[in-house]
Length: 275
Image 1 (cartoon, rainbow, N blue to C red):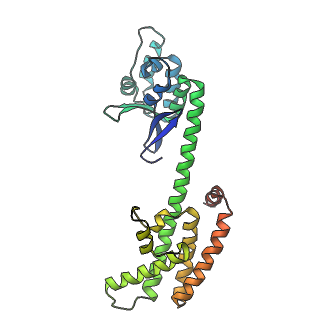
Image 2: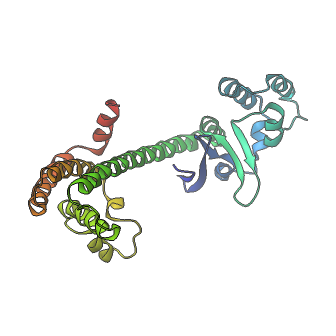
Image 3: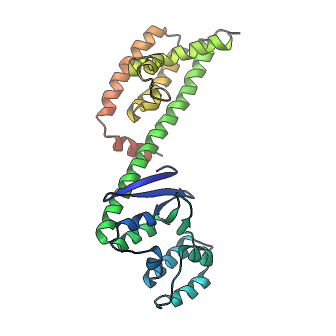
């Protein structure tokens, strides 16, 4: 879940977004699942709702105005009592729920609060909301794992290019010719891993942005990171490029066979266990 995302719960699209690195869910979108005309103010005026919000704020918000909260809670239950999200936030300095205006506005609540709001919609909706939210978080973790491996591949690529600079680029070579050598050595890894050069990939995928490695799987990125280190060592040992290509291709095949036998979650878990 990057800056903004969407949950799909029983056919209803519910927006999400990050606020101070925390997950917030649009509860005004969730109202579409409730039968009849109901408003967030109907939920907010409920005494049990206010007690839950107050406890949450006292636990997670050091700036929460407990004095104002006590005054608001004392009026809860009266027929005349009514409070908006804006009034709640301004009076108590609450952070768990907030409203924004405009075309893409809405009322967003911290995931803890939003899940409780789901129960107010109905118990079945809350269960499906939790299930969809957990699925989305699992996808987010999977993407984080891929990004971590991509960054690892980039760092190893720096080691790789340093080895090229120190061992393959003659002194006083102009920058244009130097870049050709870098690209040529990068393609040694591309051919060994993917069976094609960067240029061949671009010609075969004219509609895709980025490069061949941006579309690599986690296992392929792990293998590439290993191959970059090994190629750097072989460059330092003055191993001819043709011989390195054959060795790297054999290593790629062997390592991918091993990695493909390991579930992706196990690879990520083992990596996290060693951090």
